[in-house]
Image (cartoon, rainbow, N blue to C red; front, top):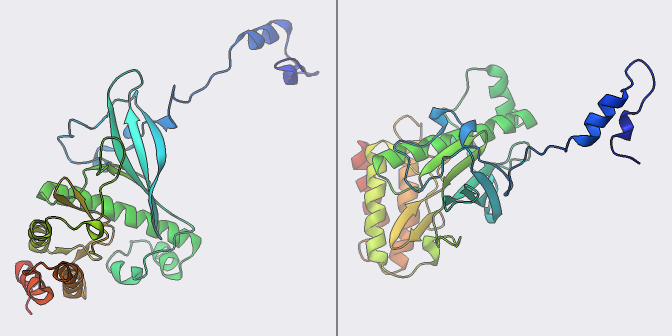
Length: 291
């Protein structure tokens, strides 16, 4: 069948010979990027949906950049993390990003999500009912809240100097952040996989947790599995459930649980200064909470 023959119709709106000649001589257009999977989404985020300024030198912000998918880094109950390279075709401007994509209607949620969602009610009663009943719409609202909460936490902690990945931007329920790993795409190991320099890593972790506590915050689900180690540096990840320990009804318990989880692991690995009760007491003191 000749190209554009579907336009050869009879009646009032039939195309004449000039129209058909133009259609057949005009190449089909493709709005996709010259290479990669999508154009950079940098311009789809508002200034408040982008990371703190000044932007790091390594970050590619050119609108001519494209994003290329390189596979899944991590799967989870609430989100999957993908490896993406963002680069400008024909140049050496490229950076690696971790794209955390929260699920919506199929969102399985955290096993303790009701506790973390305390205080995150919206002003709209319809949304609150949907969230409470876990309807499909309610799960979409919860997914959006998790994404916004994590991006806000990353921005806040980055500005405080807490070792977290640089938060690049948020687009709906996708968070783009600094990839922690090698330049050729190998992710940094989790603390649970590391056995070297544990004393130094323990000191780094205590310092980070004290900084959080002084801000009245707790990670909320801290463990050796959401701590990365890259070139001797500890990096905290997975922060959607960050807790305001002052405002939350059971805030101190989150401090205690974080302290117990990490200190018990370090103590089992032979770090003599790692003690769950001592760390919990220190964090409560720094947060201004009584024992």
